[in-house]
Picture 1 (cartoon, one colour):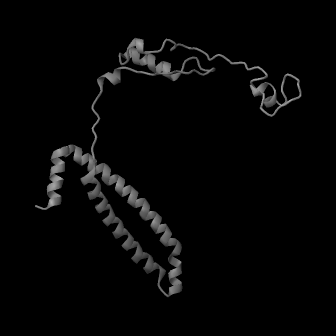
Picture 2: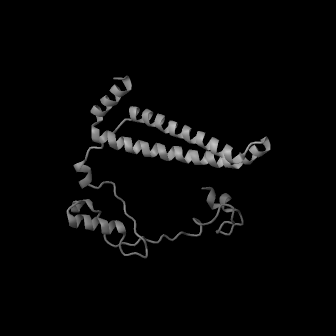
Picture 3: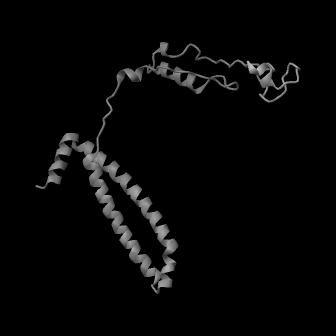
Length: 180
C-alpha cells in the first residue's frame, strides 16, 4: 500500500467517513468552480488573440481547438492536484451545539422608526417569548412601540465653521463662538 493511500485511510478514520465525504464534496465543488472560472477567462483571452495566428500562416480554428484542448487538460490536472492537496491538509472544525447560547440573547439594542408602530425585532422577540424559545426577562423593557425623540439644535450647533457667526459679530464662526 502506498503512503498516499495509507495517509488517506488515516484521515478517514480521524474524521469519520461521513464527514470526509462532505469535506470532499465541498472542496471539489469549490476547486471546480474556481478552476472553471479561470479556464473561461483564459479562453476569452485566447479568443482575443487567436486571429493573429492567421498572420503566422496557421489556421485559427485548428489552433483554437488545439490550444483549448491543452488548456482543458491542464485545468483537469490542476483540479485533481488541488483536490488531493486540500483534502489531505484540510482542518475540520466541528461546532458543538450550545444550549446556553441558544436560549439567551445578550447585548441587544433596539431602534424604532417614526412611521412604524413596532419594529421587526420587537415582533420577533414577542414571538420567541410566546413559543418558549426566549425567556421573558431577556426581552428589553422598551419592546413596545416607542418613537425616537426629535432633537432640536440651536443656531450655534448647526452653523458651518466658515459661515458668519450667528451672534452678529461679523467674524467667522470658527474664530468666534466655534473656537471654544
